[in-house]
Amino acid sequence: MTRVLSEGFEMKDLVGLSLYDCGISATARSGASSLFLSSGNAWLILPVSDLSELYFRTGYRYISSSVNASYFSIEFRNGTTILCSVRCGMVVPNEKASLLVGSTTVDTGAMSLIQGIWYSLEVRIKIDDASGEFELKVDGTSECSFSGDTKPGAATVIDNIHIRLYRTDGSISAYLDDIAINDTAGGVDDSWCGDGRIIVIKPNGDTATLDLTPSAAVDHYTLVDDIPADGDTTYVEGSVDDEEDIYDMEACGLSDVIINRIWTEARAKDTASSGKSIALITKASGGAEVSGGDIALVGSYTKKLLGAEQLVNPVDSAAWEVADIDALQGGPRTRP
Image (cartoon, rainbow, N blue to C red; front, side):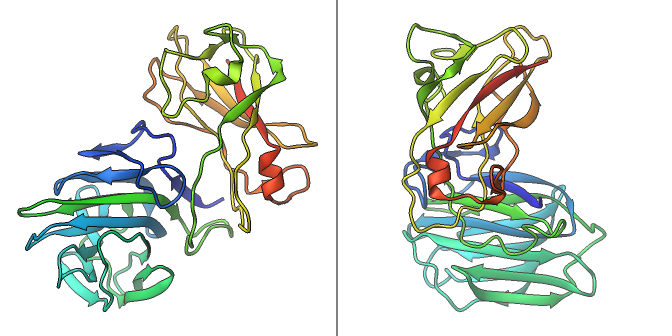
């Protein structure tokens, strides 16, 4: 497994994200929501684990006014040091994309990125002082590239990706969606991310397995299907280890697609500061329950809880199909 990050902002909150002047928008490339960078000073930081080579993707859409010096930037950094960056202008005639190593422009594309249109921006970057690689694809087509010295200083690895807007005056904003990062290890997801899209499916029915205590005398699934999550307004809870609720999931509404991965995501907290954990469970039709592993809880709804990605259906070890997703069940299990 070499997918480092997948983020579609489908939970419609900012939990677990490091950002400034951003919000959730219904203007989405896929699914129901995107991240809105709402001013010319907005930024998002994505942590990565000391990678010298990676592949990055984001959906990108911008809106601009008559601003003379405004641009969108994807900065591959070590700490606060920018090793390489992709810069997209946001005002005619400067809306083309460029690659920079340090502060030096090493290539500029020919395509004009038009405001109000969703683009898929993909980047390959390898940090090396002799055989470095740096390339930008727009909607799957190479737009600009550079081979050579991509190591402008002493740093040899990327530990964060800083996505931001810059402006001097006027009003600019942008949207991000369907973000993905691959490293180059493991033989899977070790190259270009491709045109991926992220959606969410919610619980829509109870099963016979309902061990947890509901906050109201209603169907359990109705207490956990809120997006964004409503905190302590509706919930299920448990204090005994290995109790669980399992829910039916709504149909995904997809057709003629390749499903590369699924994962579970939740919002939960430890109400007693007892050091407890949670496991997020999936159950494919005809198979056993599969745990995504224990996730330590904190005492507030400030931690993004992610189950392990599953690249294939565990029942037949084949790629997920739409019918598999439509028959999927899942839910939370209390853990020590």
